[in-house]
Image (cartoon, rainbow, N blue to C red):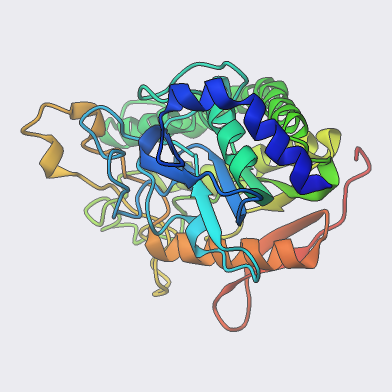
Length: 353
């Protein structure tokens, strides 16, 4: 019955798919994501959101997402591609570097010329049997996380400047709170599209996940800047122990209010951050300069991959996500186990949930 309902929804979307470009039974989405229009559809998992989940920093970007116009940076190593789930045959990455909640709304703002991710989801839902949607969103809204990182780097370069802990810290809780209803609205629109395509909420897992800290105070105090982390030690400490956990707490509250599952990545890269001096493999990039973008005058994209998860990090996130999906718990936290790999540790729902 469910498959019939979805196929009927696909017929209703004929005009919409025509606009996206249906050719020989294939709907071609923004950024080169191709979805075969197979009756009934293959099982699939879908990622949505921003650079932290698109694969930014992991390299090997899908054709058409590394410029010269579209810089969504969808990597073949992205978390969604590394989550091995029995019975799931397709991973579809709709996430885009730099996306904010406005880019994940019905009829929302385009980004890098691509239509809203929710509008792209319509075609995915119509032509696949979606088993899970994982969303990572909010950092590019009021928190403006990338701008905060830039402020931290600028503070390191200017010994007379106030550190970002002092300049951003007082406003951080308010920024997180302001982003919460925007993320909730995106979740509501995703639910609405899935319902319109014949899915009941219980037909698929819906996971909202938080962010991992890119840097740590556990760096070589003399060499961390030349190693690629030009950030003051106390600012790095604030980011890891205050800013990232507070953002996670805000997103957890959103998950509880909207009834979706929550995966906490705030400690996922603990001891594996960029420039960590503990000797373990790094799962986050330090400052990365893409010299190939310099001759083209693409100044904004020269350092785009900096302070994002690398391929190894995405592999670990995907491992944890697969465990979380299989467990079926409402909430979990990704933490390293005795084997050195990330595992999903179940956590309790807070009283507000």
